[in-house]
Length: 139
Image 1 (cartoon, rainbow, N blue to C red):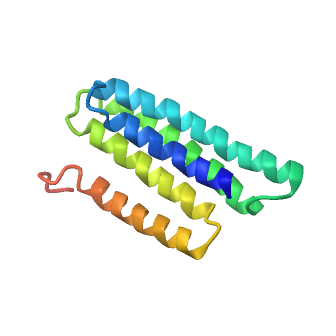
Image 2 (tube, rainbow, N blue to C red):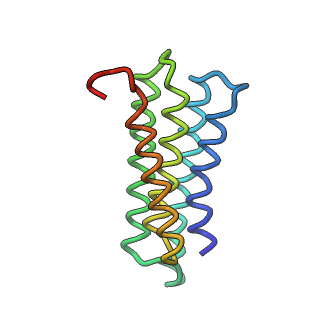
C-alpha cells in the first residue's frame, strides 16, 4: 500500500512544484515533467516489487500505472513545447499532474474509499482542464 501512495504522491509533488509562484511558468512545466519521470520510476518500482515478491497490487494495475504515468509525461512534454508563453501554461501543468495522480490512484486503489476519492479528484481535475479556455467558443 505504501508504494501505491508514493506513486500517486509524486504527481502531487509535481503539481505543487509547478504551482510555486517563484518559479517561471516554463521552468515550472519542465520541473513537473522531471518529477513525472520519478512517477514513472515509482510505477516501475511497483512492477519490480510485484515480480520479485509476488506482493503488491495486481499485474494489470501496475502495468496500467506505468502506462498512465508514461502517457502523462509524454503529454506534458508536448504541452510544455506548445504552450510556451501561454498564460494558462502553469494552470494546465498543475491540473494535469493532479489528474495523473488521481489516475494512478485509481488504477492502484487498494480500497473502495481510495478509489472513490481518486475518482472524485480525477473528475474535478478534468472539469478544470476542460475549462482552461472558457472564453473560446470551442471550449
